[in-house]
Image (cartoon, rainbow, N blue to C red):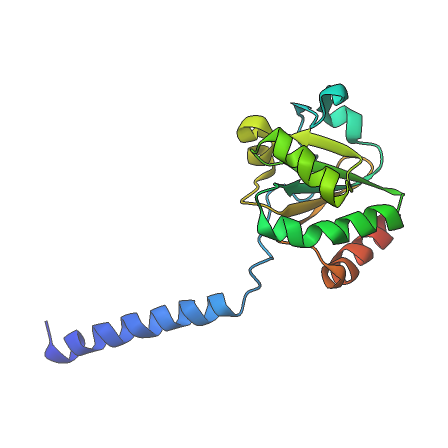
Length: 177
């Protein structure tokens, strides 16, 4: 092999790696394509967080505009977004907030909501993670906007705050109302 060609190979590899790095740095990590957007909310039958709740299914919650939030009492970003979710659930009663609890202690989740307030109209426990797998969840928190027909319109990865709500959720909600 030519000596000049041998010298060019490391330079070409470096340029290629630098290109991938620069491409990755220009992307927003909260925007991850979801295979579930524009698809129906998956069917499920899962227990409620509170014993008196019984089980919940897709049919129980579909019919209103849903904010479906995947959360856990162990999740620090969930602690950060919780006051905002509580505020929004009180501010906009036309939205139905659904909390899907990540594999966690149900007692710890109940205590978390008792101490900090409960923004959720439905509290569902995803024991075993079947619903999270069907939704393509990668971690907590993740939030899905679901229309009244049960179609997933948007997926947000990470904590929701007032800026995210105003810039992303409000325009989408205006389109479907």
